[in-house]
Length: 449
Image (cartoon, rainbow, N blue to C red; front, side, top):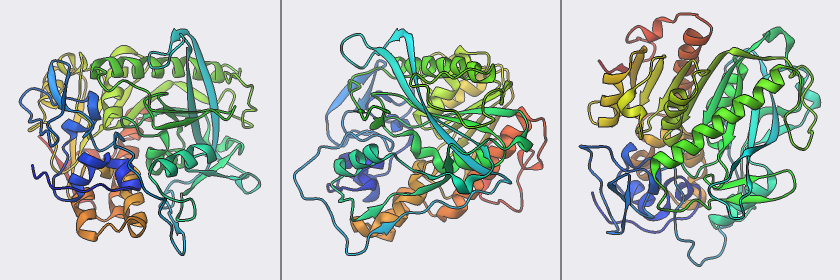
């Protein structure tokens, strides 16, 4: 692996983790083996490039420390003044493709049965989640920002970007809009993001699934995410120890997911689980369909989807967007449907955890590859990085090295289409020819047999 790299601020640095990250933009490359940063060691038979020579032991294997994966922000915060721009860059998200407008609501959920493993003082585990759902009468409700104001300020300050230099996206969501009754009972999807990234990093996929009639619950795993804003104005950043075992992190995430499903059960039964008694959107109570639950995630979030399914039988189907597995699920597999959705350089032929998972699973497992993509292509980095490149001075060649050759809008459209087809098939029992074999309409998708 080439080791020439330079320090780089901005969203690219946030996405990649400066030292190891810009090595990617400069030609070093990052494989999904590094996808969970300092807690994510390669599985047996995979290489573990160590550009810094500074390693930690993780799950009895070696992984780079502070040069971590594409969804980690372990970069040193060097001196420097915030970057400004004469005209701020306004980042946009591709329009949703479903039939419904989209509503959102943020909930603070507190699990008094667990102590937060990453915070001092034996505090109960508290989480922020965003519920995305098909909505109506959205014009009278404000647009939902990509990040809330304090979290956004933390995000930009950490990357030395002046607020005047960039306008972070406005999503398709409308805060507090009523649930669209024509959507009926809503099948549930849970989203878990990559290590040290925010729940907002899956917005392009999450809001599109909501526009197709799903209730999507995006979770911030507190003290793992880079910034989590709570209603009292507190912002909690990444406080997770750098020597955390991957299996330990995934166990915490799986417990988070099971707790959130418990709280969602309260919504389905007509009560409000928010600790602040935040008013729920009209029509939300009673709308979740607990008989149809799926989960998906990017990078470490994909591993969390599989681990959560192993631990919680309520989850009927799952999808892993380019993340390597760790812990028991890699050797036990699953007895329910699961989608492996990989970037061009990653599949079960070169990731032993996927090979083992495939061999030990008794449920229906599908393995798709998106040609021309890279690991970051399955996150909001796919549209963020090209649009903010002018702020950071990133060249097209560097973007291609980081995101691959596929056009951003095309990558997002394909991911949205195949995720929807998959969950429609498994949760709504609507079969799709897209999942049976190659499609002329989507030649970028190949089936790994």
